[in-house]
Each structure stands twice: as C-alpha cells, then as structure tokens.
Length: 312
Figure 1 (cartoon, rainbow, N blue to C red):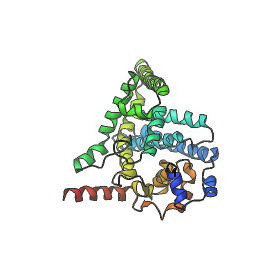
Figure 2: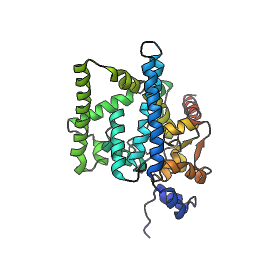
Figure 3: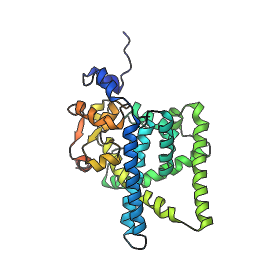
Figure 4: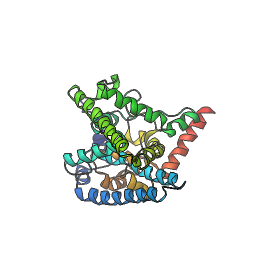
C-alpha cells in the first residue's frame, strides 16, 4: 500500500482539526485587508520618520531611530507574507511589494522565497532547515544571536557570494538550477542600487539616509532577532507542527507590526492561509498547538530556563 506524503495541510485534515470547506474559506485572498493595513503602515512609518526629524539635533535621535528601526525591520514580516503570495490576490503585486521590502532590509526576495520554501518543508530538522536557529547552549550564545552580529555577517557574506556568481552547497539544494542566474542577477542589482544611493548622497552632500535608514535598520535588527527566536527556538526538533513551532499571544500593536505572524504554528499548519485570517485559524487550532500565553517575553523566559537547566 502506497502512502501519500504527509504535509502540514494533510496533517491538519487527518487530525480532524479542519474541514476542507473551512480551509477553503480561510484561504480566500483579498486585496482589501492588505490595502487597509498598508495605509496604516505608511502612517506609522511617516510618524517614526517624523520623530527622527524632530529629534535631529538632540540625544533623543537615538531612541527615535530605534523606534523607527523597529518598524523598518518589520518589513521582513510583510516580505514573508509576500513570499507566500498571501498579501494580495495577484502574484505580481506580492512580488513587487516583496522586492521593495527586500531592498529595505537587504534580503533579495527571490532567494528568500526559495530558502523559505525549504524552511517549511523541513521545519526544525537539523541539517535540512536552512532557517533553523540553533538552541543556544550558553547565555553568551543567546546574547550573541540577539546582537544580530551573526545575522548581518551571514547576510553580507550571502549577498556578496551571490553577486560573485557562487552558491553554497546548501543553497544549491533548494535553489533550482534554472534560477541560479536570476539569483546572481538579483544580488548584483541590489548591490548596484545601494551603490547608486551612496553615490547620490556623496554627490549631493546629503547623508540623511544614513540616519533615516541605515542606522535605524541596524538598531532595530536585534528586536527582530528577539522575535524570530520565539518562533521555533527551544521547541523540539521533530516534524509535528503541534510540537516544533510556537504561537505567541501578543498585543494588537505587535500583531499589526508582524502581520499576524505571532500565530506562527497556525501559519506552519496551513501556509496558504492569508495573514488576515490567521486569527480565525487560531480559534480552530489553539487547543492543539503550542501556545505561549506570555507572548515574546514568555517564549524567551522558556528559552532561558532551558539554557539554565542544560547547564545545571
């Protein structure tokens, strides 16, 4: 007897947590929620940009840039949704929005889409999940990851390698051969755009983007690392979605910033469910998945507790 491949979707169906009609309803895509979200997003971005401007000649520019940076790094959440083609109804709009986000946070969209596909296929599988964040063994490792230093080192190495026409052995596994040239072209285009931006600032003598974009991006990334750790770090390295992923219950402003990706276990169960219907999916799965009621802080307390227990 031949058995079909078990996926999160078939797993959810087999476990009786969802019906096909419910999934069909949850997977309906619509531009309207995204356009409303984006309108408010731009207002928030304008607000944090204004704070940086108002604080320009005082020490308050640093907390202003941190706040602005937190919003900037959350373009990752929007890009992530665009990778799944669940923000807008059409692939074209998802790709355009995703590419803009990738340019802001220095993450080529095409490459991220292929990498993220393998993350969903091999979630929490050591040696197979390209986005797996290892469980820190010491407090030092924990703090180093949160500093975002390893993240930026990996990203700059990655984009430089692609621009030179090289892929790592792991990348060759998840990027189709026919897409290698496109990945290299994307990296070169992105670096070219950055070069033009810096040349433009040098020619005009206006270096404002350093303060409105570059510094805030680096200040905000540790916050994104703090959030990304809560998704899988400290969960078992098994294939079951109900075990290997956390859902974190967080406040409405944080849900807005992360485009509902705090409902991360639900997202892994059914990746094609748009971000705006994830709260409804949560109601269906909340008694079956691992839910952290303490939110991001609760998840980190759990991670720290595991580090302490391992060292005892």
